[in-house]
Image (cartoon, rainbow, N blue to C red; front, top):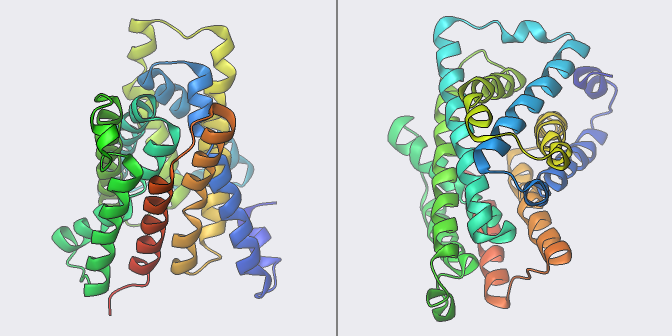
Length: 299
C-alpha cells in the first residue's frame, strides 16, 4: 500500500496517532546508525558511499513500487538546487560519521541535533524570517545544553585529550551542512521529499565512487552492516519519516525528533557500555526543551 493510499484510509482522529508511531519508528531506526557504523568498521567515506548506494537502490525500488518515479523529472533550476542540497547532505553524513568515531555515538548524535538552530539562523540571514525573543532564548539554552552534553564544560574532560572535542567539532560542522540542505531544499520548489532524498543518494554515489576503488573495499563481514545504512537508515527510515511528518503538527514533529538521539544514547549505553553522566543528561534535557520551545514559532 502506498503512503497516499494509507493516508486516505485513515480517519482524521487516527492520523496523529499513526503519524507519531511512524515518526517514532523512524527515530528508533536512525538511532541505531552509530552501532551499524561501529560494527562495519569502515572509513567514514566508505560508509557514506555504501549508504548512498544502497539508499539509492532502496528509494528507487520504493518509487517504482508506488509509481512515483516521475517525481525525479525536475526543471533545471530546481534540479540544481536539489543537487546542491544533496552535496551538502553527503558532506553532513561524512562529518557526522567521523564525529561518531571521535566523540562516541551518544555525544555526537545529541550534538548534531543542534541543527534546528542553524536552520533558524539561515532563515533570518537568507530567507527573511523573523525570530522571536523566545526562540532566541531557546537557542541560548540549547547552546548551554550542548556544552553540558559534550562534556566540554567539565574540567575532567578538558584534560582527557582532544578526541571528544574534535568529534564535537565535526558533529557541529555536520549540523551546519544540514542547515544548508534546508536552504537549498526550500529553493528546490516542486521537488518532493522522496525526490530530494533520491537525488542526494545519487550525488553521493557518483561523487564518492572513486573512494573504495582507490582505498580498498571493506571486508566481507562489513557489507551487511553497510547495506543496512542504506536500506534501513535511508530507504526505510526516510519512508517512515516522511509518512509520519505529513500527519503531525510542527510542534509534535519537533518533540518526536528527539526519539533519534535518545535511542542513540540508550543503545550506546546498553550495547557499548558508554553511559552519559548526570550533567550530560541535564544538557540533553535542556536541548530537548529548547527545541520544543523554538518550534512553536515567533510571537
